[in-house]
Image 1 (cartoon, helix red, strand yellow):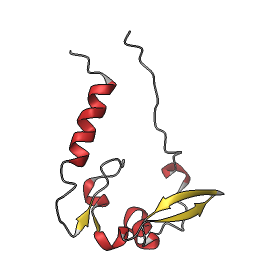
Image 2 (cartoon, helix red, strand yellow):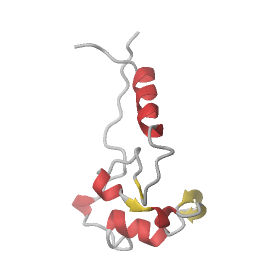
Image 3 (cartoon, helix red, strand yellow):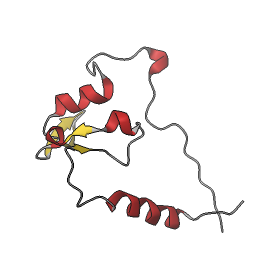
Image 4 (cartoon, helix red, strand yellow):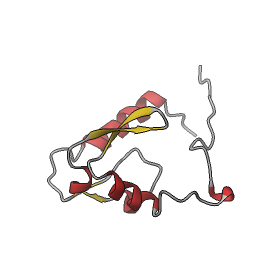
Length: 99
């Protein structure tokens, strides 16, 4: 099995992400999300003019139509999922030293 460097993968991912930058479409998809493309496919109007939003005492970039964005990703985003369906967003992090 051939080992591929993080640098190579990073460059490959960047190339894929910018491939369609000048392509006109009514929909946009986040290439860096953990969600499927189908779930991430959103109307250009949802992203609109970017803004900033406060969440848990921190400020983040946000799409123009925050409620529509959150509803598309999470459904009823104001309702907590059952305990067994919750996670902290970090599933597994490991470091491999390839030196």
